[in-house]
Length: 331
Image (cartoon, rainbow, N blue to C red; front, top):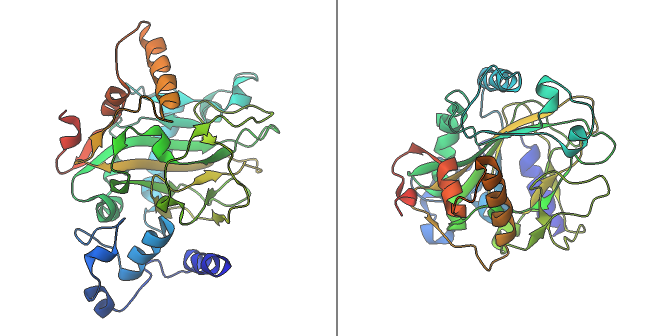
C-alpha cells in the first residue's frame, strides 16, 4: 500500500499533465482491461486510463483558463448580491455563519447548488476541455446532473468548514455508477491550509456504504452526510491544486475535505455528469432512503404542501443535457 501511495503522489506532483506514454502501448491495450474508462470516445492516454482504473480519480493540471473561471466567479458574486435570480437554484450558508449575525454578500454564502438554469454558470458544464474528458468516462451522451460552486469559508473555530468523508453515489438515485463522473475545478490555489479535497485511492472499487450525519461538536452543514463508522486510518491523498486544475473522480470514491484555516474563502466549481443512457432506481429500503426523505422534506417545505413528488423527479429537474441524447429522463 505504501508503494502504491508513492506512485499516486508521484503522478499528482508531476508537471506532465498528459502522463505521456508511447502511442504504441495504447494500440496494444484491449478494451476488456478497462472498467471505469471507455475506449471511444476518449482523450485519455494509456497511463491516464490505468491511473483512473486503479485509483478512481484523475487530476489534470491547468485545464480551465483563469479568464473563464473569473467569469464564473463574477457571476457568483452577482448571485450573492441578488442582482441575478435563477429558478431552482439552492443557496446555502455554513451552519456556523447561520448562527451568527447576518453577513451580506459572498461571505454569507458557502455554496450554490443546481445552477443548471443559469446560462452563465452552465457554461462550465459545457466547456469543451471538460466535456472531452467526461466523454472518456461516460460516453457521448452527456447529462449534467448536479452542479455546485463551493465557497468554503474560513473556519469559525467550530470545524464546520470540514466535509466528512463520503461517497457521492449516496445522493444519486441513478445508475450505473461507472457511467457517472464528477469534474471539480479549483478556482484559486487549493491546499491543506484552506481545505483541499482528500481522497482514498482505490475505494471506487468497493460498494456504496451507509452514511449519516457525523456527531461533530460544532454542528454539521445540511446534507453533509459522512460514512458511518469511517476508519480514519485509511491511507489518504491530499489534492493540492492550482487555479484551473481539474480532478475527475468516480462516485464511489471515498473523499472529503478539511477545514479552511485561512482568512479567505476557498472557491471551486463542479459538475456531476451521467451518461444519458443511465436509469433511475428506487432507493426505498436502501441506505439512501435517509437522504431521499431529507430532500423530499425540503421540497415539500418549499412548495408548502405534500406534493407526491418522487426522489427521481427531483433529480430529473436538476439535470440538463450537455451533449448527445437524454434517454435517462424518458421514463
